Length: 435
Image (tube, rainbow, N blue to C red; front, side, top):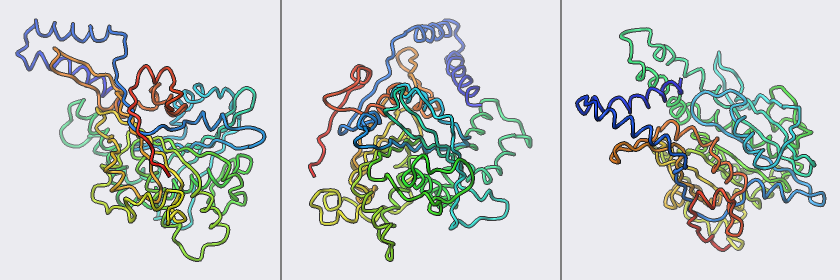
């Protein structure tokens, strides 16, 4: 559906100009020649600008694995708008593993149907919070190991979205023009997720991500169930055996970024609960001394902040996040690196500014934001006066972009910038706050 829409949009961009300008054959020929000339240019002219502090990628975690200090690198993937099936991140994973030199994959795929007894279900609803696919990957020498957790939460919204299928089919009333029909179907498949998340689906979707975080942090590979429907906290192997040693990363796309940050912020309220068991107090103590990284592609944090109250604790990182902070025992984590990838031509993506971070992200998660502004979709110029970049490509192409993959894999450090990034990106480095 999307591919036909993209082709229609590109064709419309070429054909509409001569019509609008009077149908002049000379102009039509000029447009065609301009498009062909643009297509013949092999040099990649897409820009890339990084602004923020240095950050580690997944490779630095893998490189620190050794027999004397055993640990595992864990990555949780959270998708965004529209319907997804388990396996949706396969292409992204393959490119990432190739970049990291992880050429061996465990034949076992563990599939957990997520459940939470506190969620109230209505008749006819699926009674699960989505699917968690867990896979294990190693290098040829088995020196490095990564466990990947792919969350598919979209079944939560599927039932409500069925109400729009009749409109997408357009069997009643007048028929739509083909391109308009493709666009309407795309809107019907995606926009409802934003509305449901900010409405009656919030608790369930948050619970889905929270359960996934629990499975990632609370269990080692050997202790995970191979299949079945379970609540993480009730699984007997959920003892958080390697929580302190393991490294944890999040990779999110679109709405998944907002959901993940909301889930992490909600942990700050759990920390305030009274009558916690000694076990839970020890877990939260371990987590608040750890550093985490969230790689966000096409995030909608500013957009979905509209209509919401700001978090309770703002502009107070000095008290919560520094070594001598008077409230450091109340923070969620020692540092939450947020790497925000945004294409300016992506109509559903926003940079995370310092002002937004200060006024709309809870200080207790200790956020440190680096923005990566880059062209995912190519711009096409006509007559040097009109430029166009397909917004759908700009929104959906992050997971296959080599620069995005490289930064997730390798991070960026002032003394070690990979050739691809040094050649294709400009880095405006910020100095981190001393703690």
